[in-house]
Image (tube, rainbow, N blue to C red):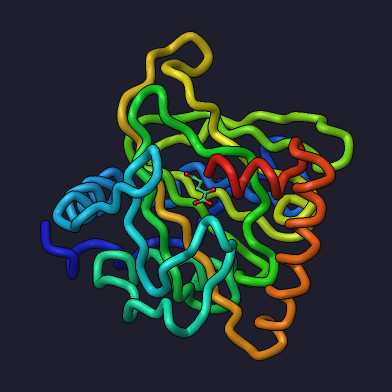
Length: 233
Ligand SMILES: O=C(O)CCC(=O)C(=O)O
């Protein structure tokens, strides 16, 4: 099916749900139709993968430096690829995001792979982040940064998970590197994470301040979110 035939006529989603009761978290079970999911999986697989992490990734819009936790103008890669634009636009059309995303990271998870607990870089990215799932359902955990309370949500194929507010800033999210979820063997999952990059001079200053704070915190407490993300992600 051609891309032009897809992504049209979708009605505003009424399946939004706070799902696990976190402020700022919205889960949309049927954000993409099965045909749209298939189109996106094929489109992603036509693109080159980066293999600098344990899992394969693709970066669009801006490359993200996981170690420095930084994005700047020199990391600009170009506009989002055509396959991702209707998804980014739908996120705005349905009022999940206020601006069309200018950064996308595609993650591939094979059984046994995951993503370390982290809060998405606060000075690098805007308030709202949307994670769209394709392929096999995987469980994502949210861990409160102060209390370590943990809540889990199963991310269905075609779903969108949108985080802002507390869910964005006060809870880390992770996917455990394991081979099954809830007693079922995992197969391949692909996610598309849409964000807006903050590039203002103020953000650069924040990066410096933030990096200093994070480095200090990591040195004091190797179990801190910053230490864990810098080392493992
Ligand atoms: O795979 C996902 O849904 C989450 C991705 C993520 O947290 C990230 O890229 O920072």
